Image (cartoon, rainbow, N blue to C red; front, side):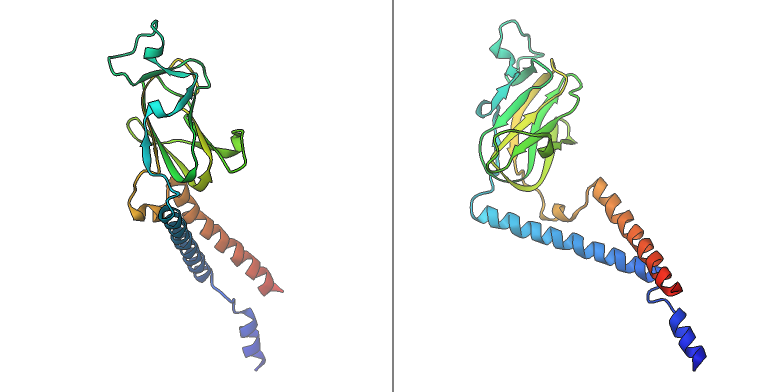
Length: 218
């Protein structure tokens, strides 16, 4: 009887392989849950007409230190396209005045020179000043196409910085709010998210195994 009790005390509650499997299953459940919750929130705003889905032309946007070539007789555009713009300093701005639930914003801009950083800032209800705390960097999703992932937020204004160096000839095609995407895109992790899903469960399982081994020794 004593030998059986000793075997029971030394037998671990979970084996390392089981902990690893449980960690990955838990991560998968959390990932699917956040996808379904995000879909429900988006559908709610969409049905209420509070999720704008539109392309906003350059003429409908306010710019600062970022002007069309046609505004200055001394500027010579690269070609005859009327949508060529030029940033006149290293901090040009494009403003969208409006409000609504935004998940993604897309900037259509072709640069003749390296633009440096391309970033978006957003305002939350009650705010009047843009800050670094609410800044999103662009992901280049196609030639002349910069996509900003806001993660689903109710915003009251946007500011996009199309470059961070100044003097950049830009073929500016406007912005698109909440561009249409396949429903399953919400469940496909990005590069950084893949790294989190691959390594964090393994680290959590290793930490859990270490803690359990300490209790087993006791």
